[in-house]
Length: 276
Ligand code: KIV
Image (tube, rainbow, N blue to C red):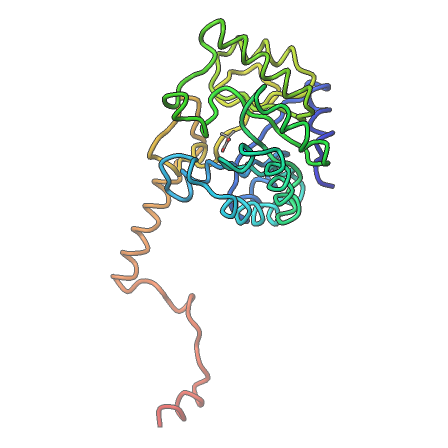
């Protein structure tokens, strides 16, 4: 049975930590689903860690739908959340509903995520009223990177911290089933987590959130252009894959790959006839 938003909300009630990871393709989704991840985010971080963009801003709806479709096929149990890219929910509520609807209809994912607090609450309310579960995202919201002036910790002044508390409450009241808290001080994340009934999922927000999310490429040491302070490496796949590629190059050049084991023999008589 696939995890539902109700299971995720119940985890907060039971004090069970929620673990979320990003995935962008079928194979990775299958792998982390089998490992027991209950919540997969097809993040628009796709733009940076898979498509090579400098930020998440250029990511298109079509790119997100394409990758979300693949992830849903690979994830048999986890709840899959599709990240709505920049400018697909800002211009009008109608746009937001239509584009959120495309995620559910075309990819079969179970929820969408969008960035923004109080200012996005009406949009979240209307999308949720259409039967589309929404995950909120406040703090460092990468789609607003130019407004924020860089990838900086948010909520460091009293006014900014109070606004983040208001943002979180507004999202909960609008019907969001959970809220991502990105790059905010640990004590502030704790206050928000204690104040909300729906779960908070932290990334660079300390240990008191109800759950944690990480970008899989940071976790596996695959993306080395930029490693955020909040990321912990559980593997160094960049080095492992580079070494495996070098071994392959050397084998081919030395004639030690392929061997008989990786090749197909032919019937001797057939071969003889062919040669004649
Ligand atoms: O795009 C993404 O991967 C995200 C997470 C960092 C929360 O939004």
